[in-house]
Image (tube, rainbow, N blue to C red; front, top):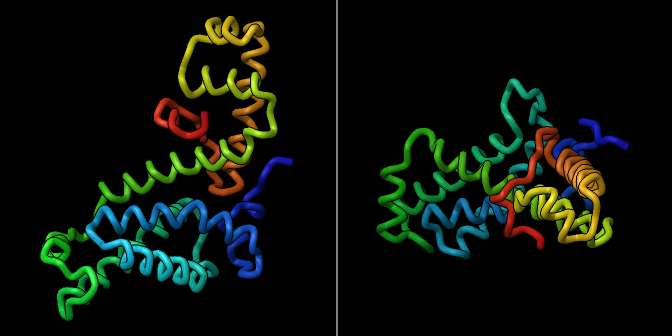
Length: 210
C-alpha cells in the first residue's frame, strides 16, 4: 500500500498516544537537534536538555502545524523551534551565566544573525542522510543479500551496472530489477516519515549501511 499524507509520521504525531510514531520521530530528529546545539557551542548536558525542550514544544504545538507545503516544511518549522530555544538559552546565559556560559557561547550569541540559512541547510542535509541510514537499516533485511548489494553498488556507490552484474553473477536486467525494488521500498519508507516523494540515494550516503 502506498503511503498517503494521512499516514505520514508528522501527522500521526498529533495522536500523542501513537507510541510508534513518537519513537520514530525521536529516533530520527533528536540526534539532528542535538548536533545543531553542539555545533553552536553548547555543552553536552545543555544540548540534551534543549533537545528535550524541543521535543516537548513539538508535542505541544503539533496540532497547530499546517501541512500546506506553501507554508514551509515540517523540518523548517522544527528547525526554527530548536533554534529559538537555543537563542533563548544563550540569552539567559548572557544575563545570568550558568552551565555552558563560556565566553565563546556568549560571543556566539552576539554574532547570532536574524536568520541562519547555513545552519538550516546543514540541518536539512543531515536530515536526509539520517533518514536514508535509518530507512536502509530497517528495510535491508527484507531483501536477499545479492538484491541489496545490486542496489547498493549501483545506486549508492555508482558502479556501472555491467560491472556489478559480473561481480554478483547476475544479468544486467536482474541488477536493474533489484535496484528498482529496493529503491521503491526505501522511497516508501522515507515518504512515511517525511512526505518527500523525491528521495534519491547518492554517494554521500555511502557510510550508511554496507
